[in-house]
Length: 336
Image (cartoon, rainbow, N blue to C red; front, side, top):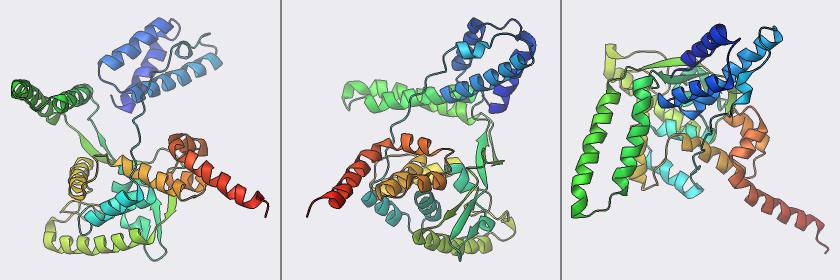
């Protein structure tokens, strides 16, 4: 479900049944969202919107009880972060040299950009001489979380997991063929869901930030600009000049799905474990913290709203930093 649809639904509920709304009705509505394939994050957001609207209604003395505060927030299961270590990061950068994703991987890994932020970069945001990059917008796909599309995602994950779990035995061939047919049917259904890629404003002021580029990212961007100029000459009148850094062969913004496909191929070429593009952002934060960079600086680089978010997300790095701090303190306080 789109965020706009969630907001609309919440306000309709407030307008129509605010005086009669009970926690039981609201819990049933949340269950309906879950049945329709709305993710836990979106359902939590819907609860926040409705709670805020009902709080306003209480201040205006339209109602006396906020039913949204009386139900539990949908539980979210956090995916385990699998960041790259320094050796793996260098192996990935070696594998993507002269590759169309070279600049993307290097900037995402070196600056911790989100996927949409990296795809939304324009050359006007980059100052290679000063070595800075401004994050001002993002590329986002809309429509994939409509009701038919949302149902496809969990089913596809289930089928892919079932295929991986099948052991390589002759008896399993029939089950593998059946699951493959079901997976192809799900993919076909998802392909029919109409989506569109759009340029969107960033969510918060913290997300709009200026980042100092590491030298390796500057080198990658210079090489990428040269290759892009060559592609522009080759495309001739078919080139769409919109000033984006990461583009297709005709200058349009690079599709998130295409970037993902190319990235998976890079991982295979580099013989690295499977990971998603967002793990480059996690890798950036982990590598910075492991090098002793101040968490406040890491927070500002990533565009987090609070330093506590940075520390909580990357708490797996903190024990090593604490041991290093204890060692340094011991060196200061040790008697000669």
